[in-house]
Image (tube, rainbow, N blue to C red; front, side, top):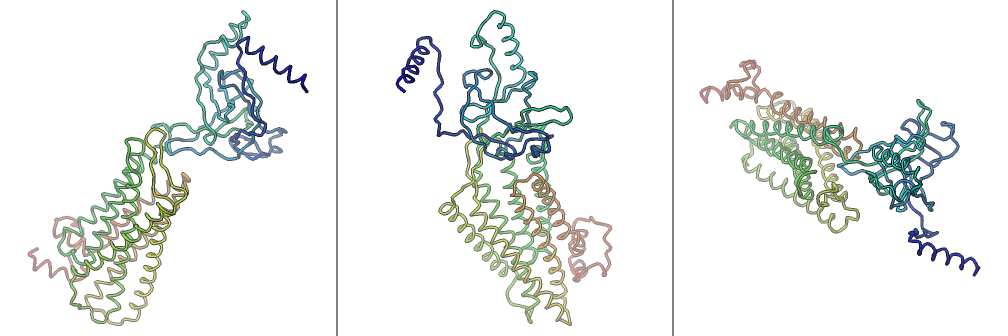
Length: 479
């Protein structure tokens, strides 16, 4: 035993005198985490995980360790453990595939550092290094004399996964790695859709909602309680789409508080469904009431409904923010690797908001069912009942459109690209359907637009096409 210690002491002394640097041995109990793309009994077969029995291979991938100081030749043998799973790329990154064939030196080099990071050496500098080594080898010069700087990138654990790969077309066995690289604007389809197409569609949706709000606010005949509710609801949708667009556009630019943008977006979305809930209550209570000629004016009713909507929205959002700052254990941090790390609304606060929206949807379903039963039991209709019946139809259509859009928004949080793309499509379709239901599907609105703006000439100005006696209003107003 003492003899072995004496030999180790003289060996260390010899290395120190000759100026050679020794690498500190790894602790035996310390294991390095290395990302592996497939399970332990699987490897990559044509970009997909497959069992070893399906590939005619008998061994799995083993990492090739190299030294930090020189990224080509000096190798180490360390203790490690595999962690199965794909890399966790940031929002500003996308996955990139790299193949390394040790028998073909024209390819990129992939190796593992002692820290567990993956080093990717680009093939151009790799060739230059190899060529210089071949030239200097004739003069018996050590590898440490090579001065060509290798161009390489290191990817920490969690931002890469590697594995053994088999390419069936070329019958080639290579080393495969999936790494997270920065997204390039004009070459990455995911970046194009989420950073360019999505803001454009949201801008179009904002214009659609503004169109509905302006029509119901400008025309005096539409500024009743239903018209004010539609205007308030569409303006909330405008604010929601604007806040979401600000988040997308400024994600890779200047520092913007994502928490504030998220808060504004969720407040607007929550208020939208409370306005829809007020709309359903108004229709149901009007059909349910025996005396529809109430002494309360539309202005007073609108004040009551506004107090309900904004009071409920403030209370629920305050509860969500309280839960976020006091009870949230896993807060969402938005970072692009360049700008400041920014906090966003967490899952606990989102669950409070989404649960409240789900509750309003359930209540609205009850309003629809009870209103349908009331309509079936009513045998005679007056002009007011006739008008409210059209409002009930509008409420039902808006309820279905906004509820489907909200469900699509929830599903898009699963972070699958296909679900996000579907939500972008649903988002623009929702805006178009809202415009159709609130304007083009309403004969009264088209009639008033044709008389006010001298447009929509294809609308027939006959009494059969006018719902509630607007022809008398037009005569009295001098149309």
